Image 1 (cartoon, rainbow, N blue to C red):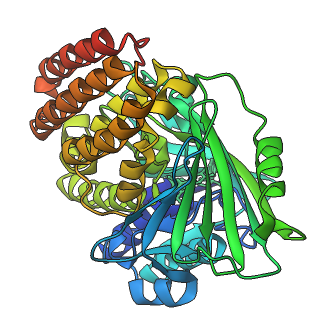
Image 2: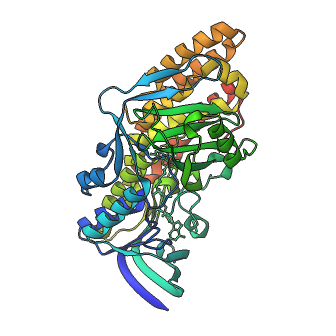
Image 3: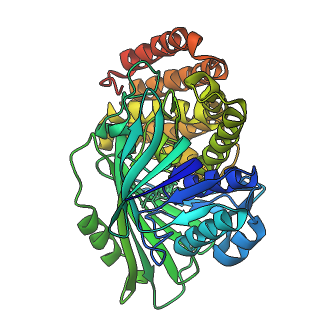
Amino acid sequence: MTTETRDIVVVGGGTAGCFAAATAAQDGLDVVLLERKSEEDGGHIACGDAIKGKSTFPDVIDREYLREESFTNENIQRAHFINPKGDNYDIPFEGESGAVVDRKRYGEVLLEEAERAGADIHFDTVVQDVTQNGRVTGVEGIREGDYVEYEADIVIDAAGALSLLQDKVDFAGTNYDTNVDYSQFCSAYREVIETEQPVEYDDAIVFKPTEELGYLWYFPRTDREINAGLGFQMDQPPMPLVDVLKKDLQNQPEFRNAEVKDKLGAALPTRRPYDSAVAPGFMSVGDAAGHVNPTTGGGIPGAAKAGHWAAEIAAEAIADGDLSESALWEYNRRVQTDFGKRFAAMDLYNIFGTAHEVDELTDVVTALPGQMLIDLMGKKGETTLGVLDKLKTGLVTAFETRGHWNVLYEGYQVSNLASELKSIYDEYPTTPSEFEAWQAKRDELMDEVYEITGAEPKY
Ligand SMILES: Cc1cc2nc3c(=O)[nH]c(=O)nc-3n(C[C@H](O)[C@H](O)[C@H](O)COP(=O)(O)OP(=O)(O)OC[C@H]3O[C@@H](n4cnc5c(N)ncnc54)[C@H](O)[C@@H]3O)c2cc1C
């Protein structure tokens, strides 16, 4: 057995872990990143690969290098929605165009950049447990077949959705969010497909609603390499993802004789960010803390920011010699008052969606993904305005089909509550002592959402 001692141990070499490790190393801390995959496999992650552009990322890595190496399509100008019940339509992106990346290369570059910043990277290291004595003091696991232990001032949990570390930490006496259930996640699957002929929509990301409250997408990495995927909410009946995708592709002429280059599935959180993601000596970032837009599944920008902020706050706490929950709390506040409030507001539409039949929603708001996409590509698609637009588009459909005005009105009410919710998140407490009162206020608003929509409480 070997024991290593570091300032910070980061578990997980995805977007969140790499940004945490790069930031901590740049701050002069002794940091190791532990990744269960081999070096060869590092960066291989299930993703749709769509992002807003290089400005998505904190400036602690060489963003230009990342762009040159992995941004295979930087010309995404519009979101194209296929409406099974009516006309297809486009939402153009104003300002910055979006990008689709080669996800493997993107992941490799992030790992390279974390290492270049000064972090050690230990591949083939599977973390199995945490060590703790009132605070988390490190992790233990297996590295290349041998038992290893890492001691650290702070462990950053960047181990992705349903992180194993959270099953191991004793959160008693802390405010860490343990109100987490598989039904708040989405099961997703994607294939990277090479077509014989160029597709016409290489300037668009394409969406199509599916049953089971999900959507199917085609994101063109190039005009002949398409990332096609789909997902469903785990509180809905399971969908045979591989078969549904296969059937859909068979019906698309551009995928005739196409070759599948890669396939991968994963769970991703489609819930609000964890109310608190810190405990003494412990911080969760990215998917491990629900930092994903719950309507689009876009999690790369949140993971990058969260990793960066967590490491900044961890560095301050270490310098002050205070590793308590209070010392790490500012990280929660940064998340919640930034993208956290927006994701919490978007979550209300998920809740609204689960309370209705798919058919009814398709009739009324086939436009829902419009907002999703605008968000995914990072445009300032603020909830209220976006949803009003969406509802307007839905209104046309509803007018044609009639009988769904109550759903529209509900949507309108939810949209108002989403704005209110963001204001509550703006007032996220600066210390743990005010947290309970804040939660009570937020939960009061959630009760109203459940009452209006008739949805089962999600939390
Ligand atoms: C099908 C699909 C499509 C998506 N499409 C998009 C998209 O188009 N745009 C977008 O922005 N987001 C998208 N997302 C979400 C995005 O991929 C995630 O939000 C993002 O990758 C989260 O990064 P992360 O670093 O938190 O976690 P991850 O990228 O999951 O990284 C976690 C890492 O931890 C490692 N790990 C886990 N457990 C251990 C352990 N015990 N020991 C050691 N290492 C461990 C894993 O091997 C992994 O490398 C999609 C997700 C899915 C599943």
